[in-house]
Image 1 (cartoon, rainbow, N blue to C red):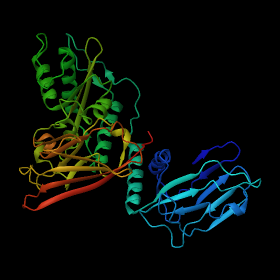
Image 2: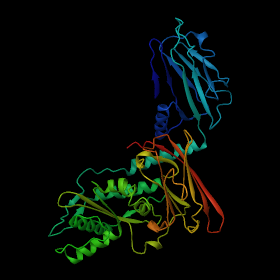
Image 3: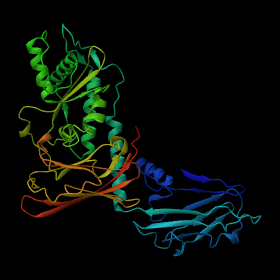
Image 4: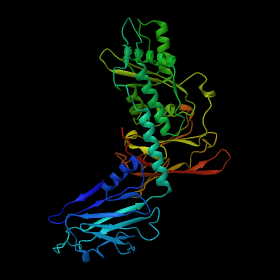
Length: 443
């Protein structure tokens, strides 16, 4: 990949050589290029600056260099090799320092053999990779690999047998491949959150969810507690009522998968953001089985259900965890987190004291420009903030925040999240800090 810019007679462009594998990191650098920055470069980074005409060798020395400051004052002792139309800038002895930002300059004193100068000065910041960069690349690659295994594959009608939402009512049934895609989406989302991605389909749950979808379609109403149509069989109604009251439910989503990804995991609307309850059920450490349903009303408007609550679910074993965050730390696909979605951090109640909330505060910092947002009960100037202690998903201590002024999370952008004012059940004060960097998932 490269970057080019053309001048009237004499132009340059930069050839970049990446020494690590991570499709997501390449996407991140694409975003960095847009802003003139190149993040995550190796300590032995070589720059090749290539021109469209032969160079006057004597003009190169002192006009192509690397500095530690943006003003070009503190130059490094980089060796430079000239090859007709290109210049290779070698790393300094011992290499660049991890985490340090440097600046590559190409001054307009560079000339061609006709002694014509380039017209514009180039300054390109670049940052050297750290151990955190390596962790990011590994995580981003593993997410991409998981997506390749779990991404939706079925493209036909959802219905094996089409449901009927008027008398005589029928639940219908969904294709196995359609249901498999929904389970896979559930498990991919859980993988993103560092949760076990071994949730399985329960056929009885799907029948409950399908009956719930039909019942909502019959009533033309989204409800966890739907009314009984007068001409509906009692046993059908009871099954639909059970499904609706134990499921995430949605209206207007064209597929079960879109209701999961764009509805339940988003929870960005005013009626759900204060608790992100749908999200918490999908991210529940105790979730083991799911079922799905979809049906349209008489006008073709769809209702969906995802059964997530099981009898005696509370006794299910759960993995060891300190907190469940969305977006999760290290690396996260930007396409799974639109700008309007709230962040959430669900703390393990066996570790953290959910009765001491007065001092809890969140600081969110964007690494590239150090833009900072602060959230607390006493300061909501940076955006939305709430702490919910209801037991959605058996995650009864959830911090929710959404910054103002972010319309999109761009690939390559890294955010540092710090939660302070926490107390452990032992009475000890605590703080949580983690980073996440967004990347472009190849879908």
